[in-house]
Length: 358
Image (tube, rainbow, N blue to C red; front, top):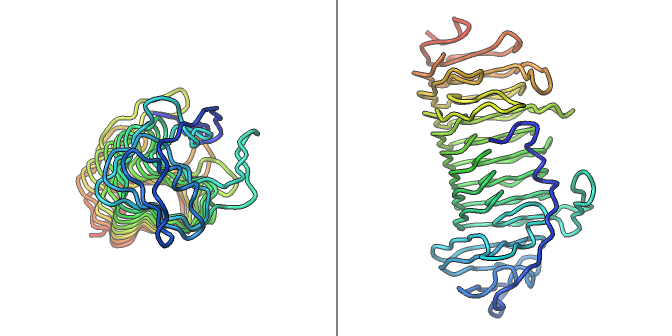
């Protein structure tokens, strides 16, 4: 599993590739471009104008797709599977091997960190099954109002569906499994206003990962069989992490083991974990059978970010959650996390004692 310190490294890696396009997409009909098996999704996206819809018909397509035009909608009709090209790469490799990437047109990756002058806005992606890319199923950087729905990300190397430095929009009605780092990810967005709802995430490092983010809402998701279920992380950047809402999720049996590395301890058995994250609202979640012996183990866990910012998980409201049969306890708060409010949580055990509602 990748360490906390290396989470962003992949976003600034430059890979030089050549792009081989398949047969051109079919003609436009009223702002809609239709792509059939054997044709190129990328060619249709490149030809699209703001407001156009690219409809991809049932089949398996081996390519990467980069979207840099505002208000382009990618849609599927029938089951559409996107897999890595048989040879060569694609235009998403400017960041990392990715199924669909949403990037500003003037993105510059030649410095220490990617830069751009204008976000790509209003892009929507719906209905793809994205399988086996080396880094990301869906990757967004520098986007505004990106909408991802009904996407199934399977066995992508690092993240299933991930948005870096992206504001507004949502990840909705999607599923992610088999990613080394996180199934669903929202990061590097101090004013994110991101919505992550009605998704499923399992068999990842983290089910849902919220890092260096404020004002995100995570609700009505089902998360299981990861090392950690929902992970809110302050990674030490100046803006911190907090002011997020995690509500009405089912977080259960997140008992995989992510082994220790030279920069991070082993992680396992954590339901909803706040590592230095502050002023969050954790409300009406069902948190069951998350069991382990690592620092992050337990049902709802509030920890001091000793390896990053040094901040406690302070000022959080933990209320009306149903947390049972978690080990070492249903609610866990370490000594460095202060000013938290625990109100009417139905649970049996807590560290320290007395946090459960009787």
